[in-house]
Image 1 (tube, rainbow over the protein chains, first blue to last red):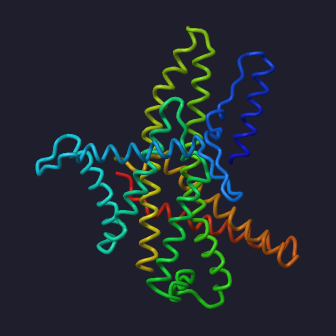
Image 2: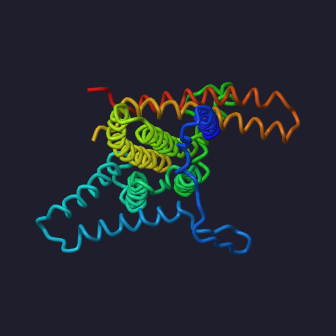
Image 3: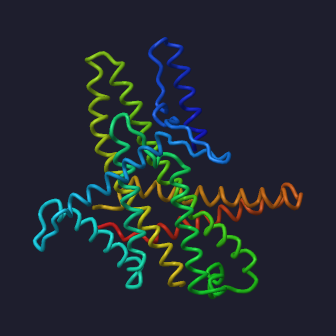
Length: 263
Length: 68
């Protein structure tokens, strides 16, 4: 995926160089820059722009909720009802997909949703960095979900959880075929979870960068078209950021539900 | 909020198919290196990966409520 976009960028760069126009580099804003290099016991713990913008997103999420709930009242004001709507939204997802015993996972799912949402949305500020466009970030989220749900399954069901990989009502002769397939489809979960979020974010931001480049380089009578598309796609990006956070959350709920109530 | 817009659905199903194949190929490659049985395991497990991919895709598609 990344190699593909990289080669595409290379070819566009070559074309740009051939026509001696300003260089187009739509992947420039994905560059991780070390702001404060820290190295602890040979481990690179530098504060990069990715880390910085993730912190900013987290601080924003925290202070938005602090602000909304600064004077909680029975009859909520505008900010408070927005915060409560977000709360209710996650509560509905948890209740619908996991059921009653899903309440205990609510804080985890709530945090996950708002972390991803605010990372996606702060990435749209010009000059910022989208932390969720790094596959290492989304992969860490997804591995966290995967390891958590697997351990939860073993904790709740013990060795019986291994029956998850054996579809019921299957002839014994088909087992050697079906068990590897089930294991592969289980292992594919964190990969698809992380790649989906990362690919959506990277693709959207690359598209925006290309459109911005066209807007900046075309003469005035041509620039309005890519500019219009830039406006439209920024709106679409906000929508995609919401959708992807929602999909990540709902799939987390589905995986936790699978671990809790094996079918 | 409309969670299942056409584009997100298409991307979701596509990713579902591709990642299972990738996992299958990775497992086959590892097993081949471990047992020194070069083409066989990777061939078998990429096949498994494709089946698992379609299975995941089918599961994801059947979890979607019907269009209004």
